[in-house]
Length: 397
Image 1 (spheres, one colour):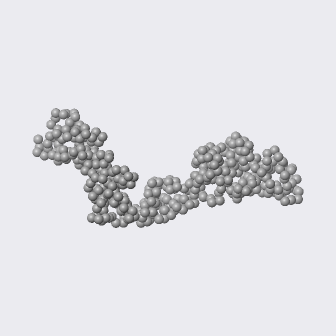
Image 2 (cartoon, one colour):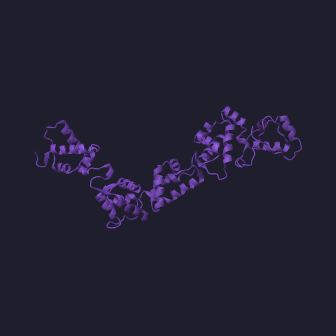
Image 3 (cartoon, one colour):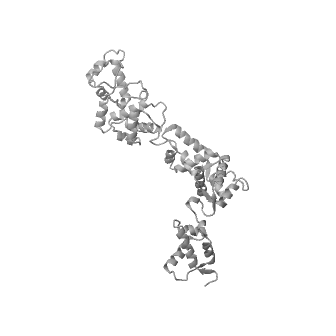
């Protein structure tokens, strides 16, 4: 046997004893604690199981490292870092104080300065902030407590060469959110084709330290977004709940079902029915209704049943409104009459209605058919000297 190698059987017996005491731990954890490759330890264990009487050897250094491990050194779920550990509360409160008094510092910078991983520091800090017991390696706690005293704090992070000033990006995102309903940071990131968490983190970092940058490729894509697609919709301060309700009713009167309207507005039927029941709008409702209105109000829908139901409820069709009247609570629909009752027509009123429908692209025969007038009756009215218009009309047919 070579002088630098020893019998592996005592070492494997010791490892098997550790596994028996801590069956919840993977073999890789023991290997990592010993500072050897996991594949090396797994190979030794495999040989010991297959050929228990063979004279497998292992280097003296590897044997010494494995034999030096005791159960108390192994990680434990209740002790965070595991092994020779201590209460993390004093060190983590010191870290929280540093983060509060030095806004330019980040958890990542403090973790690097203390020689520990960011995930370990973040998890321990989260537990301590929540009042849960947490332990970390005693040496790591000492290094954290030394920050700002024996160990100088990290300076201001220098901007990486692949980043640019984040202020234009933050301002652009805020401007889009002001211009559009339903424009969250996640939605804007999706429209720009960037990771939502990347954009959100960059904006949070910028609020903490305006010198923090943002990846130049992310910045370029976000700044290139000038218009947002549906269901985001340009915010309109004058849009009212009654106007939104009239738009929904008008689309139904034109032959569109609530399912079709919800699909066009990228929302759900439940959202629309809840609004029609409560008359309470949200940015999501406004964006959905206005988006559907822009897509559907100018063309007839395929559902005769939707038209019959709307007619039974006397809902006015889209052409009964214009953008200046639909959101006015006191406005009445144009070009409508009470079903089964004669309209008190006069030349001025007929000219007003014909001008309204012609403005929306209808021919004169279509206008007269919608108004329920024959060509002869219309010609007779138009040749009569005009009088004051009677504008007392009621709900839609």
